[in-house]
Every structure is written in C-alpha cells, then in structure tokens.
Length: 232
Ligand SMILES: O=C(CO)[C@@H](O)[C@H](O)COP(=O)(O)O
Image (cartoon, rainbow, N blue to C red):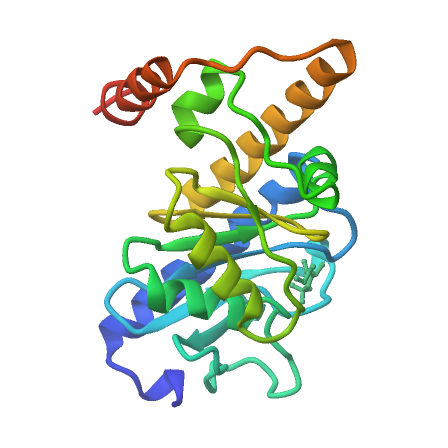
C-alpha cells in the first residue's frame, strides 16, 4: 500500500495523526517516563485501517511528523514516504493486536517509567489505595503476563488482562506499563497517571500498610471522574 495513492482525505488524516503522535512522543521524556529510545506512542488514523507509531530505536530529539511510520492493523509498515530501511517500533505488532481486538481503543502507549516498572518487576499490581486511582483506573492496576518482545505476544497479554479490568493501564511482567485510551492523548495521560500513583503507593508502602479504598467508594469515584469531572 502506498500512502501517496490513498484518497486525499485519508492522506490528510494520516498527516494530522503523524503530527499528533510526534507531538505526544515529546510528552514521554518531558514527564520523565522514558530514557534514551525506550517507549513509544501509537494512534489509529481516523477513517482508515491504519495507525501511526514511532520508528524503532530513534532518539526522541530526532522524532518528527515526517519520520512517524504508518502501519496497517496487521502491523505491516506501508510505503509511507519514509525510507524502507526505517523500521517501525518493536511494539508495532503489540499495538496492532490491541487495535484489532479493542475497537474502543484509539491510542496505545508504552513506557519504562521507574515506579510502575518496579511493580512490574515484582509482578505486583498497584493496589487501589488512592482516590486518584479510583478516578482514573477504577480499581487496582493489574499485572499482565510475561511476554516476549517483537511479535503480538505483548498485545495478547494486554488485551487478556484489560478485558477483565476498568484500568487503562497494565503492568506487563518484568517489562513495564502499557496504557490505552480513546486516543493517544488519553493513553499518554494514563501513562503519566500510572507512574504518579505507582510512586505514591511505593512511598506509602515504605511507610506502612496503605489502606484500600472500599469498593463502593471506588465505584463512586470512577463514575464521577469519568462522567462529571472537568469540562463537557
Ligand atoms: O521495551 C520495548 C519493547 O517492548 C520498547 O519500549 C523499547 O524500549 C523501545 O523500542 P522501540 O519503540 O524504539 O522499538
């Protein structure tokens, strides 16, 4: 598939998605969630069975709309105007699997943020001991299975774990957080929030035994934050 041969409205949608995804990548180092080339952001292209993700192993300072790679929902890079030697992210198959199996998801983010990844190293969910967790995650942040990198194993682990949870974040065992959202910005927000609550909960666990929030309070917090909080 060649980008330059797609309908003009699809090309415009790809361009806008590349601009958004390039801009959102800058949020990962800005929020202290990644070092060097770790992590990635991906987003569906509205109106097409395509998504945009960063190229593999390229420094954040070198990312731009023009080198965001464009892939099919099968995880194949299309002829998108970038050099054919520019490989998409190692997590392309994982993101593609999520987009194929979770139609409500428009964005996927992966980081190695320190505190959330520490819980992943321990295979330990982040318990729901903060109102902020009831708000954003609707409960604990679950742990997903260990999965090898490079094929759709990570995607399978994300989907199977998040199916039974309200959380937009999963801690893949021995690896780190993957987050989802209706678009890439929502998934980036979940990546920022999961690191924030992981840091607070880890600190609380150093001080003592954090007290769980009661389930009826979690439900009320989640309902309010998801439906009432903020501007509508
Ligand atoms: O941990 C992984 C692989 O899951 C990645 O976050 C790498 O750290 C960055 O890979 P690229 O997106 O640069 O391929």
